Amino acid sequence: RLARETHRVLAVSEATGADLVRLGVVGHGEVEVVPPGVRLDGLLELPERRGGRLRDQLSLHPDDVAIGVIGRLAPVKRTALALDVFEDVALEFPAAHLVVAGDGGERPRVEARRDRLPDEVRGRVHLLGAVQDVGPVHEALDVLLSTSFAEGMPVAMIEAGAAARPVVSTAVGGVPELLRSGITGLFGVDRAGLAAALASLVGDGERRLEMGRAAREQVRSRHSAHALADRLEAVYARMLGSGE
Image (cartoon, rainbow, N blue to C red; front, side, top):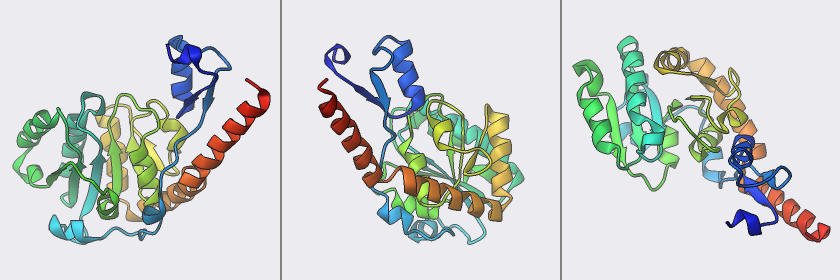
């Protein structure tokens, strides 16, 4: 109903815009893509090599590789699948740890999945619960993992890029518009594919750093708060000038 009374609808990604047209929410030419912008100053200043107090609090060794999952624990995020993927990787890499930042209705399921992990893996899963400041989490991570079956343009991935951390993800929604496969991260279709992609980064520290640098440069130019403000200002100016 709101869309029928709106001159222009803004979508966070091309995929989201296409869905709006496909579902009949808006017509062709009524939707414009404006990728999100985030305040990134603190994340852009983080060192390329991970560290920080959170690693100390979790008793992580300097050689340990921290894989992060950041977001609400909801069915769409499939966090239990992230634990499946981690199990496959952790059995191959004893230095791998999983850090889950977020809370929600799926927490009991996630905890139950953790409790079914083999003894040698279970102790390397760290459930942080809800986190107000994700900066220290990104600082502690080596790579971000996303197993969602639907996304718009995920802010956690933008933040990870700003922190110079690569991403392993499913290719859903607007993620392919953000993640450049083989350059800023890797895609996986299912448990096996995600585990293979993640394992390739867990086992190659230099590749993680190289992808992280590329991700930071991409995010710096495209997803800062200033970049968003410029895009929105251009939309408003164009709309006002057209008389629509």
